[in-house]
Image 1 (cartoon, one colour):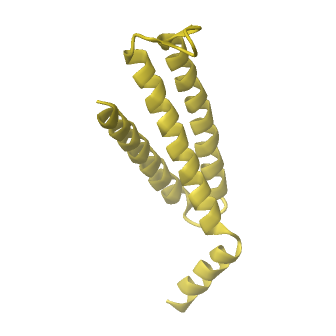
Image 2 (spheres, helix red, strand yellow):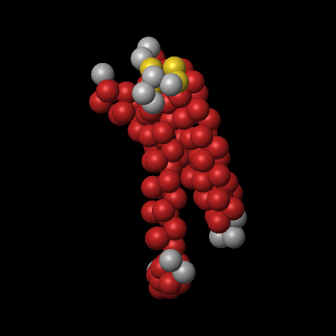
Length: 113
């Protein structure tokens, strides 16, 4: 138990918690952008003072959120690759990302409805 506690304290010294919270914050922002993009696809109104159709803005938001999400996930996986048992941690991180992103999109859709 003492060995685990020392490893945990070593992770705290390297700003591990800050990196985790920043990564999750970025994931949630990407999921919100994706939800906004999909919501714009379902809307039939013009956005940006009538300059763009909602479908163009929706696809643009979806594309931006997908690129940002890919960068965020690849950064998280790269950081985890330095830790022991990194394969299991990477699989868990991928599943958590997927569940959180889908849930945030569902929450935004329900809130907008």
